[in-house]
Length: 364
Length: 94
Image (tube, rainbow over all chains, first blue to last red; front, side, top):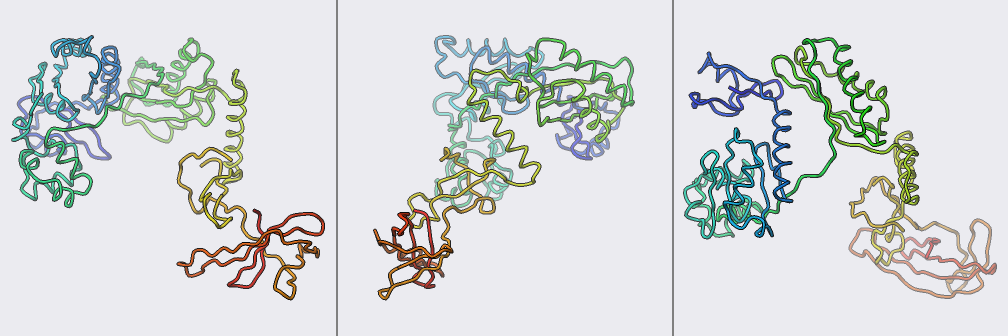
């Protein structure tokens, strides 16, 4: 049984075959009451994301348009790729090549994200399903719980006796919109298998990652800090920073019981040396205690920046503007409120002179 | 002027520009401005333009102003208006 911690509660996230009477989201006590001999495994969400991001990286080698919608769910855009992938088999072969066999990915091909998701959901593990043409027969008997709309709307559909997509799609648009507002139209379109939501590709960001397993599990703050320092030395001594400083750092640890701890540390100015980072890391470790003895420590640097005043640039005007904006920001932080204003058009057409323009803080 | 960022203005952070500044104006027998005190007395040499502004009549405090673009004896130009509801005189940029 895979468990995850939400607030102070431990919940069932997934389970092995033979434990089908459990449900994801069920409190762990309730699950153990049914299967007291089940082996508990703590979910390692950061690791799952690392693995999933690797898959997304591989998918991006196959198509420029890849959306990582949720952990384990990815959409691949195929518009304009007919020459590379002449048929469905070629697409499936390419996607299979990007996902390790162990995951047995379910794949779906359709004209929109929602029907493609449903096609994948109803394909066998490792297999695929194609939905083309009139897909209403396929959607007819599917429960309306599959609709990616708010839980409130789904409950309301059940309250009205609209338990399947077939029943929902048969309704006229007017009554649906009057009951569900703007979501009513979405519900109707999705129930008819139409989804024109665009794909949202991932933001490209440069990530530097390092991690280390400690020689022995420890609760000592100094030992964890020493490990972090060693990782930072590794990062700073390499060539990956290219003269830039650290603006955002994701610090994570994993305890011997596989529990994860994670903090994001943001830097007002790019941190250019290890000393500056370590003092912030120390504070984070002191303020947010570890869930248990630590076995592994890792760093993920996902935002880099050049230090103010040291950047060499041909575009001196842009630099000057950046410096000015930074100086204003610092001044306002010290004074506790807006200090420098800019002129903005409010109602430039107004006959009343004092209505035409206003001063607004430069930071807005 | 800066480029419009498209962000919504927050009433508590923006400052109005070109708000009217109350001044003392000496009127002649016809009710036209003859001199303005800022606070020094400055004679008005000529009235170059005059226009009326009635607006926001739907509000509890509607606007009714009679504007004058005047030329002072010193050669300086100034825009004055008389608030036709309150009867006071104001100076305002163009």
